[in-house]
Image (cartoon, rainbow, N blue to C red; front, side, top):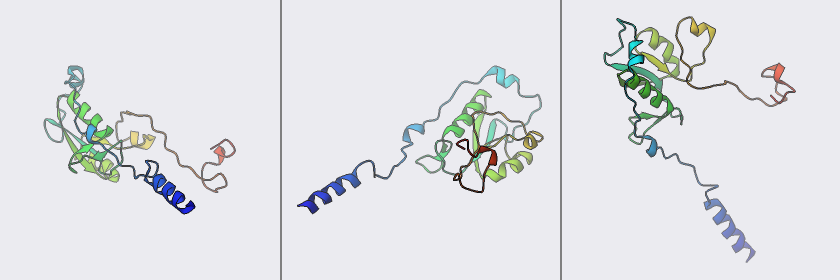
Amino acid sequence: MERVIVSALAAWLFSSPLFAAETLDAKNNETPIHIPANPQAIAKIPAGFHFVTPGYLTVATSASNSPPIGLWASDNKTLIGSDPDFARLLADSLGLKLKLVPAAWEDWPLGLTAGRYDVAMFNIAVTEERKQKFDFATYRADNHAFAVKTDSNHGDQRARGRGG
């Protein structure tokens, strides 16, 4: 009798939502959001500026599946997420169509310099060295960090003893 109760309890416990594999249902996020063109933003585009593809804002963005920043829609062809949404809103505000280019993070500096992209929208840290070559518009607060065990020989020595 005890085995039956334990088996039934185990079966219930492991079939509960606590142990169910979590799946991401992004279906509700697959409808693109749009805004109207902004005449003031359009007026700030320098005269003679050439977009990579006329009439389009070409944006390099992550090809990796990293929700909520970027992920593939259920059709496995369309990039969705916060970065594609921001890119679409930027293109809309400039009166342009959006061309998203899935790319590796390592490719953004060369891709911008070579004129393959108008914008790179990755998790790019703004550094003094990068500011010498590129203009940045930060659109989210991002604090880069890593964690190690308190008795580790790695990490910022100044953080030791301060909960860091």
